View 1 (tube, helix red, strand yellow):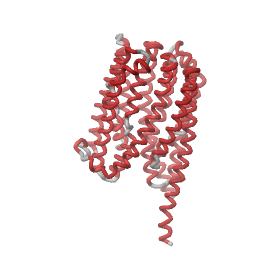
View 2 (cartoon, helix red, strand yellow):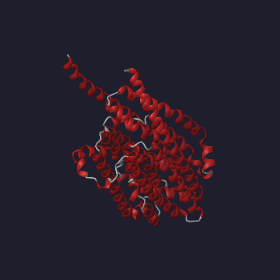
View 3 (tube, helix red, strand yellow):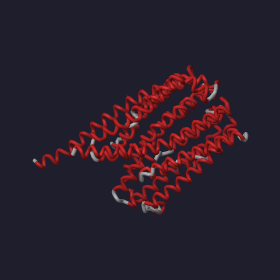
View 4 (cartoon, one colour):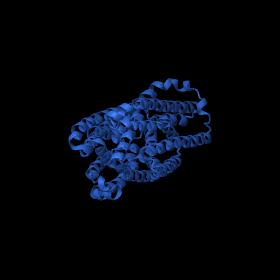
Length: 455
């Protein structure tokens, strides 16, 4: 039995490594293009205009994330479960439901962005005429949210190579469009139109590949399916979806938007630009963790459903060790050569962001050490604990931002993010211990009745 178990977890590790490798390759290429795009934008636009662009993107994206239900985790769980159980019609029904939720949330976010653009331009961005730029970038909200369902479907059917192709090719096309817009003198408006064009192109490419994938599995015609087939599970779906949505929104706001917006209010475009540069650069490290998260989540669900906690822990240890072999060396290089990196890549005018980059790098390493806790909590069916963890750490982050940013600007924002990372890691470990103990109790309860019957 031990030999069988060993072989099983070995197979899972091989599949996890293969899938994560495809995602890592695709996202690394995409990350390289994105980093080069950031360098081009920062150098050509300069500190003030780049800061303006960062604030516009931050405002629209935070609306997107506020209204986005982040369906992919829920879609992965339910579509995968229905398909594995041979429930074809329910699989189609949930695919339709996922797309409806995603697209509806995007339309709502678009309407809110249009209606609030002038207010945001005056009081958040501090550039009254920027509302027209907000309107332009808001067009991407109409279809961007649907991509989470498309990618979830591709994960369920093990099409990680196709996901890698989409992300890398779109990032290259986006880089070329942005560079062309800047070189032809179109400025920020041209850059934002480029973003919108790539958003629409990405939506249609994904939809085409998803249609092909579903056809290969004899699942064509999902748009004609009957939503009432999953009606008996709507309560559970709503609870899972609501928690994953809120937790995902909090994380995205913490990672990308809150610091920039608070800096924009207290320190202006310059402070926002320095902080944005630091956060943009460490996204290269974040792209290392994303493939592991996306690949390990379905594996943890399978293992958890089999009540094999030893395999569960073994997979988590393997994933953490593998990730740290890459993260630690990269972080060390950034910590030692931060000034040189900023000067060579972004230019001397961005040198004040050097220490900000160092602090943010430490925070990212801490979050990487416990990256597997979020998918683990979902695999155990405890989305509420993850939400509570996110609310606790986010509340502290906001408090720290308002305490530190007015006096220390971008350095204060970086230390606030570090505090957030430490608290989030600590509360995540506590939440996982609670979940494991509960899982052990349930396993013991399921074993005891059968033991008594045998006696």
